[in-house]
Length: 472
Image (tube, rainbow, N blue to C red; front, side, top):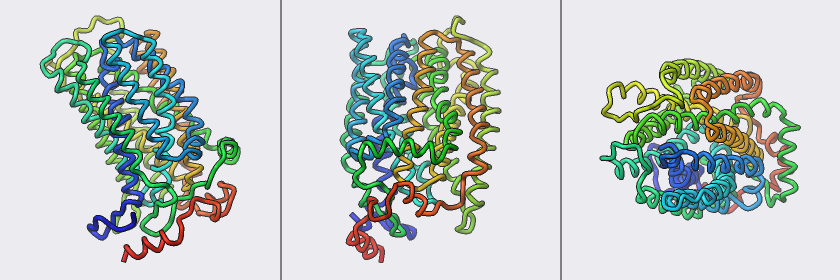
């Protein structure tokens, strides 16, 4: 577990290291939510009529909003492996419901699968957020977040290749083939199985010999109290809630209004590949910048980097969405649209815009995770942060999917996305300016857990000595 299996450039990689564990989690998300993103990125879950997908996703994110708030509690109670695996099974059922819908038009099964996935996804993302934010040391959090986001979004890229290959010669706008859904079902099931390859958090050791701070043997009551303590002891977290709420709001507009309505089936698949590939680039670039080092030292103090990132996100928001209006002003939901093909004249402009939307999404998510991770190193507290993030994010997504089902105008979806993003950045500014510190003392994190280190999920002495031996 602690014997290095690869040593390169002075770095040691062993199975119980934070990086290896993060990569395993990233591949679970590669196979589960990655395939979900590839399917939904086609618009309408691969169906011509987007109503069924709208209703399923409304149910999904409504349940996700509830379970997201308590996901940290459930993950801390039942463990990361069980939460990830059970969460992954929900994605398998969700995809199967659309395969069924293609033959039976059974709306009830699709909505049920969406609601089930909302519960399952809450567990998966709660566990994922705990690992991604608490396992790395403070100097590497930006890189770890970007590594995860790149691998995760690679899943959507690979997943998008499936409908592209199945519909390569299909120039019409139609439902994707059964083979596409079957491929997604197999891959999501494999993701649920892969979760059991993780080690328990108490066995994870960083390169410097430090361990992850997680509460030992939590009760549901104590974890529910922890959610309340997080808000009462750190009310500034409320200022991040608008960023959480808006972080998935724009997906409905991008997937349904642009990709699902404006392009034919094969071009939607190509756009999907471009969108998720752009996410890999966006996550990698921002993660690298957030942890940028010059001469082996950070390029700037962490509070300064936080302010630079905030200013960059505001500028990116204004420029990108301002440019997006020049495209959206040309059509709306009630406009008669001839599905565009990648051979159509003028395809390049919308493609570039869609790619930049993908870069923006990855940058937004990376910045939010990095910002939360900079506030604490406590696994328990970060589990609560992750629960708040995914719960509120899902509440926003549920509202937007429902508005799309009610046929809100595409321009209305566009402006609501733009205004929410700008407003969220403005509200979060006090946290960026006053709460991001260069270092969070371990004593502060232990104090929040309500115990000393003897009651944390600490590493046993034998395991620590094993790391030291193999590090020599």
